[in-house]
Image 1 (cartoon, rainbow, N blue to C red):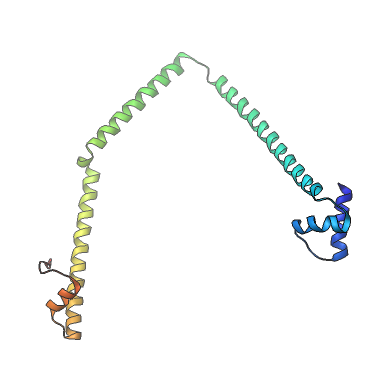
Image 2 (tube, helix red, strand yellow):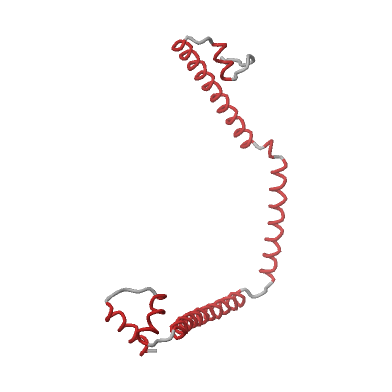
Length: 167
């Protein structure tokens, strides 16, 4: 392996050029008699070594986690107090769930939601007034500038006769 690396380095030194791996795979057999499969074998070996390192790292993590689980289980020894507390916790979670579902059932009567709807309605009304005013101002300006009649402009824009000013 070391000899092949030296031969590959000689290619760089002799040609004073840079090559990609595929180019080296083509030049290696021609210039120095290095086989392509040997280069690929080195790459595969490097990948295998990296995978083995990753596996050993994961194995050590598994061992650490298993010991942490065992330690946690040993610290939580079963007792009457713990069993009672867990049962109480379970009952409280069920009660919370039923209360939340009941609150959602009465969602329309929820004061916060009612206030939110009122605020949204107020903002929508304000926006309607603003856009109506803008439309009136723009319509008046355009008719003064061009001399086109209001009815002709409304017909061109597709605004029906049932349009009402909100003033």
